[in-house]
Image (tube, rainbow, N blue to C red; front, top):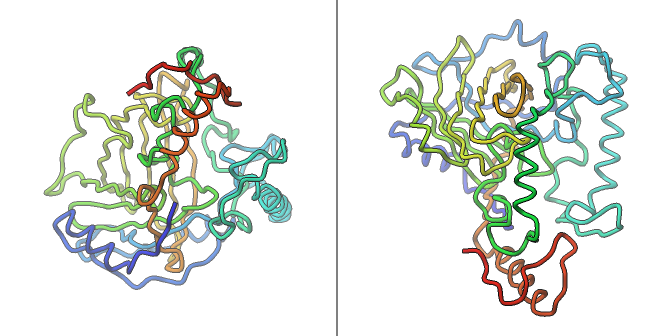
Length: 364
């Protein structure tokens, strides 16, 4: 997939301003820096966030969380019994070095199989995670044990039913068997999209009096979110109007931007959740070049209780969003399906599941 540098950040801001109908206010940007580790909490207590001319906390900027890549969402078993603040700098440095080594060794097998020795990598310059200098040992902050609550029996049953419905199909019988990422629809819901990954870790936040816009590099999505109590304010859409990324509204709680997400269509898998997924994201500037992004996730049909994770975003104008041109010149999906049809004619059974029998029509 081709990635080309956006012409200027100013162009992106102009586009967002046209979308919301008001010119976004700009501010000087500090140079980017790596995660500050445990000092971030101390800094957050004394830091006074800047405000926009109309009085809102100013969260605008180009952000990245590439230095948090390789960090597990849940607490690793080796830290059992510890809280994030209990992990010493020496312990964190040691585990970060090991994560970097693992990332480097696994890089050639990003789309292959390390176990089978099949190296099918992407261009090495795409990868953000090989030298990520993590600022914390894991991300889940609630429950206190750093673990995501177990799935409910009904969620397990739902997953089993989905698996049974797919029996007899391969991952290339139809375009509907491919992921939203393969189909250039979306990679994940916002609560997962901003989590650090191997590449595509740039984001941009823009503000006007009535809206906040959050831009994502991967798949190149933009959420334009109305702010409660303003001229563009509205309630959540009717639950029958669901979408891949759901419906978001925003409000300010002191210096924190709170984004409430509902009405997901359940077609982008997020750890087994379905259309009942509800997310509450909080963005709070904790330093001149830091915004803490904290997300609470709930789905009463999937987990027994809500759970929360928190990830620092670093403001860095050296990490602007690149164009994620997923469709332009991309013949991957067509070739995947065409190759599967050729194998089908030859009676070749794919390694990832049985193919449709010869002569059977593809699902439209």
